[in-house]
Length: 83
Image (cartoon, rainbow, N blue to C red; front, side, top):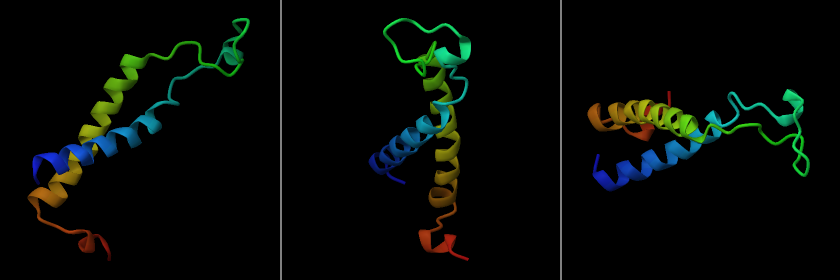
């Protein structure tokens, strides 16, 4: 696999993984009982952005490694995914 298409595939996988990782460990202000005046009760108490970026990058790297192994190393195509 060439570099630019590989980076594009990793970028798309990373964004998909971000939406998977975001809800884990998020506690709303309503759940904790500490609602800050002027904010919505469903707003998260703390985001832990760096932790989510690291988890997203690790998950995306694992998935991209599987994609690279399947298409780059084994030379399979999309038609090979169909039974």
